[in-house]
Length: 75
Image 1: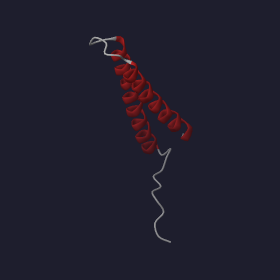
Image 2 (image 1 turned 45 degrees about the vertical axis):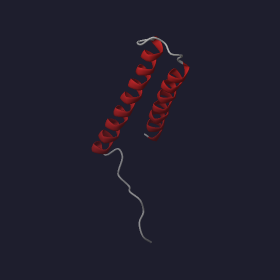
Image 3 (image 1 turned 90 degrees about the vertical axis):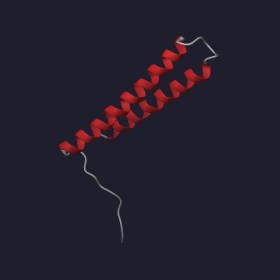
């Protein structure tokens, strides 16, 4: 369970880094250039992974696979 969440978070960071690299690499191309499409695709992947992770965590909580722990308070 934890491994899946960590892998999803790493995928989100990789997609964000990829979009940043596409943004920094372009040199004033005409609108609609390939770099813009690649950057948009990378950001779309990031959003899709984020939404999927959120739904997975909610589903896991609903099925009882994970339990809310909270922070230990007091002593």
